Image (tube, rainbow, N blue to C red; front, side, top):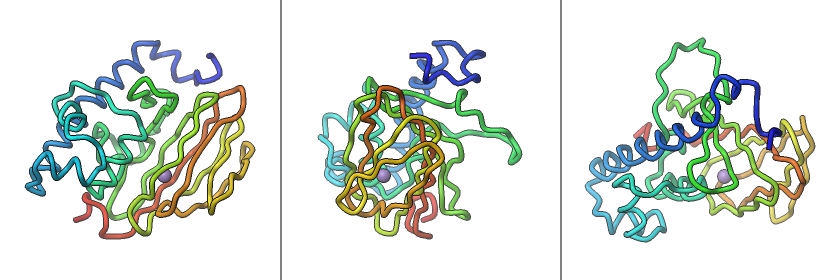
Length: 211
Ligand code: MN
């Protein structure tokens, strides 16, 4: 599986990904409590908004369960916040070089890895991720909040994106803008990991971070 090893990983062996996963679980637990408190939502109300079971949301909030990236998206959708709002906060100077090898994590035993390169900033209204789909991964995403637009640019491997009801194959270097507020999806039918950047634009004022 060396195909998903970037050079940054050399300084951060196997343990790095596990630690990042633990960090995600801990950060998510704190963010969920804060989001629910802000809205004065019961666990039941939050579970309904996110479309996940109350038991599952409770486990995540207590740090007992680490959700998949797909589940993180549903939670972000339920609270109307950006995905990076749920991930560990990254302090750092504006000019800090962001190395995906240092922030890439596999939140759960899922075939999708996420590296938050640039967290959501309400003044800029976007966030940027490096996403890795292991071979065979396929997911059709429920729509995000109205006005979300995704910009996908493939770096390595071959990615297929579901947009406007059709799967479109993208090669490294190719990009596609898609409406995140409609059904869309990603899949890797190739034998190598598919690595792509996803710049996600949010409508101004619609994210919890901005409200
Ligand atoms: Mn999406």
